[in-house]
Image (cartoon, rainbow, N blue to C red; front, side, top):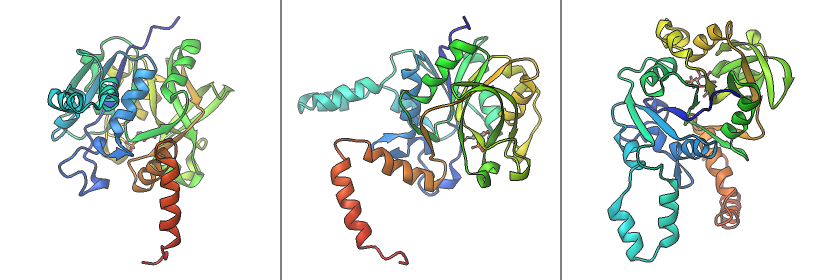
Length: 296
Ligand code: G1P
């Protein structure tokens, strides 16, 4: 039996430059898909997968994320007084218990690998999950839960992957697929943001990982890679020489909410999934689309 995964790391220090001016004073992780912030989707997914300790790697201007996962007595009191028990119950359900969250800071924007390394003391010498909150999934069960099932079977390191249009491989980390099934296949190599001609497949790393703690010492030795940043993929490429990596081509679909198109699509798709919104939303959209000339 592999050692249980209790802790999840959420890198939330990014500047969100692709969403300016929305992210000038507000963290991009608090942008909402329908009525939930991006970070809430990632936390929900982690809790569904049995995670007990949530580690946030934050930065300047990110304090509101900490507030979001705290109780808000005034609001709770007001909802109670107004008899809005359903809304109150929902708020309380979303909240991790006292002591389940930890926060540390990435003091400089040196890349994803560096952000993960900043969590080393809080994670300690145990396997951990890593969730990039920009990536929102429509999947049942959640993607991390599907990966946990693979972890219980195979152990080692697990990476969630999905197919991407071959012309877009240079936006992501890409894995080479070895033997095995979609629920767990050997990863034989990986490369960060390759040219389409150099990509080993069209399976991209979509922001969900289960990693062994040996990654931390590799990250501390890592020099800057693609884009002048300390890359997680480069450290994983070294770890793969001594540890097993398994890919999970999960059942579900990711929306890259770090891009405007992905974010807008996620809002539409998630709204269509909501029984309280789908019907009226479709009617409004149909009317709006009928009245829109494509060239404004
Ligand atoms: C990071 C990872 C990349 C992965 C991507 C998913 O890239 O380095 O391997 O495919 O997240 O969003 P970034 O988006 O930070 O450039």
